[in-house]
Image (cartoon, rainbow, N blue to C red; front, side, top):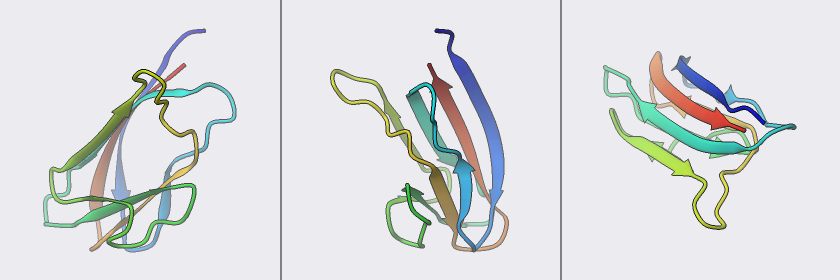
Amino acid sequence: MSERVRNVSLSVGTSSVVVSPSLEEGQRRVLVLTNTSTAGQIISVSWGQEASAGIGVVLTPYGSWSESVEGTFVPHNAQIYAVSSGASGTLSIHERIR
């Protein structure tokens, strides 16, 4: 099976939005999330449920989260949501899916 790579930068506001759909086929092999906001916005990320400020993975400006297949650990395939502490936050996403 070939590997798909997804590199995007998304605008995230103060309402929870889907930033990566759930995967019905394939498996996330690598996931990197980076808060690239330039005005101090904090971005909160959640898997499988709407994101809420300050809950889940909380990324300060230029903070990042990464996970990848290692040993028996496999990144979750659930839909990923994000919400920003202020308007026009920016989240960069790198995914490798096989």
